[in-house]
Image (cartoon, rainbow, N blue to C red; front, side, top):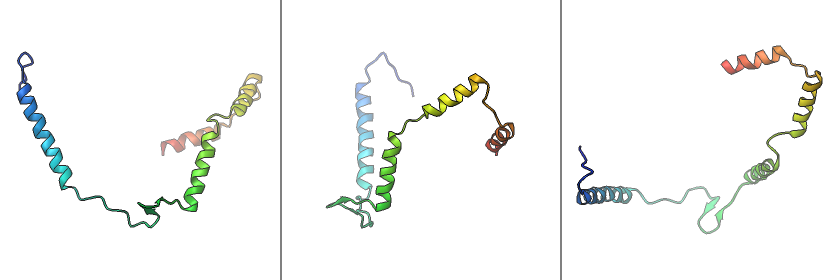
Length: 103
């Protein structure tokens, strides 16, 4: 297909757009109507009811969001240990962790 940008193709573009819209409308009309879930914890009248486990999980997630992503105190301790030369590494543990990544 060749498109000539120098001439006006508005009529053909309009026809293509109309055809695409018709196909989309036909596809939407052929979909079955949404059904209400069989789960009794969900109803249109009362909204969504969360189980006690879901409520606990939600509370835990909120507490986790309030925590900092980085433990600044631990970072400061490690930084100080590196500075004064007292930081010790366990090469066997590091090697094991690297090998575990390869599996």
